[in-house]
Image 1 (tube, each protein chain N blue to C red):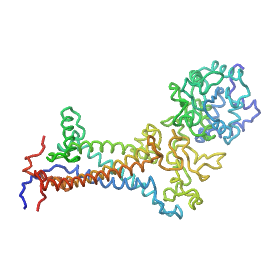
Image 2: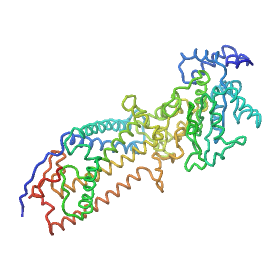
Image 3: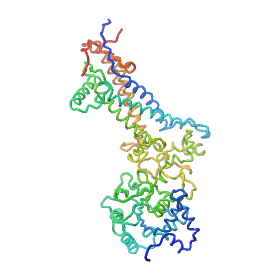
Image 4: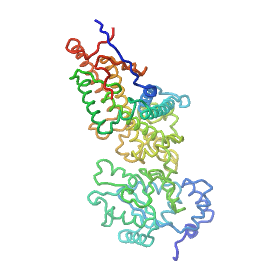
Length: 235
Length: 366
């Protein structure tokens, strides 16, 4: 019994947002993998002379290079927080005025009821990020800044380039390299856990709401059901 | 004694030749981490500058700094500095004792107010009004404040005076405090290490004596000449690190071959010191060369950043010993369980919706 449903195709995620998303995915994969290897190198090479191999140096090089990619992708995203469309703007992630904050709080409660506890059946009607997602992304951006600062602080003593040297003050402030290392490591796990939840929820929304959640990060467009209360949650 | 003698004049009185003196100056220049073109400056300084009065305090400490210092490789250094030069007060090495010793201290502090160099070995306990360390009936806290008032500069010898070291390790029962937390209005040079390398101590003090200026310091107040690089970056085992050749256990073949001790908890990558360059005991060896990882003794809180034989340190605040990786794995597992439960719930609810009342859940196409 196929019902015909009218869909509205709406362009939500602009190019810089999608670019940031996928470049960050790629660099995060490299960073987390190489980072964990650096933290606990596997013992697959246990004999031979140092002159014959450089694999650990290569892993570290990949980590540092991917760190730069991660940084510049984020720079683009920050720029787009001020230049992008209403779904990309900074106030989605940091609702700092009282009105925005109240609306955001209401949104979070609704998401908890509908998507997390599933005690309310009416779907959350938003076009961009829902309130809960916005808050989490706001946090992810902050951890991103933190992780970049910690990473370049650790990199500073190994580099003569001016950019990492800008972060040399961080190490004394954090009470030494050992502390910075631990924080850098913990933040890595934050990203790993975040990525797991993020991928799960994207699939969840795609399956449950059928708005093209997953393909939207490729095409930029989502599909909204016209009969589900008209245009959804537009400000 | 109308005026204080210069070092050159003292050396002559001791029967040293001009040649001895110049050799000594060249050595001092090298010890202070300066280039050979600075020798002439050192010579001139030692010829013209009157001796710098020095007082050396011992508070909560084990005297390993002093022990290290008197073993600095060139005998003339300890000779010059300890015997002839200017050390007016130091509890462990001076001949005087009791009232006489205290008199020497107070004479120097009064006569050279604002000019003397103050060397501090050991941390200063602040709990219970500082009663955990008293000398001649006064607390270390009192003494350090009084002496610092007239000091030209302060050198914090070793990790105790620089960071608090083991006395300040959790739970720090005596409230052990490094000098810079107590004295904030004087230039303080930190020479951390447990102990610091003798040559590094000599080099630092030589700079102060020869030039009367503070050597170039890094952000935390350590002389850059000795503390600007990580042990890891100057370690002779570094090529093994880059090649991914690691010691896996203390008794394995790799340990015999001298591979990198990174996985055995070596703190070289997080420790700033000159061990791998200057080495110890007249350049004989240093911990890593002897097959033991660096324990990071010149870094802040190194006692609490343990265990020494584990690369990832334990996280403070967790009841059982936990590293970042164990916490990460636990959170990851909890996430997987949570997501799994949510997925099951969603599946059940979807069936419920399909069989049920409202069609809020739009049907997939086809």
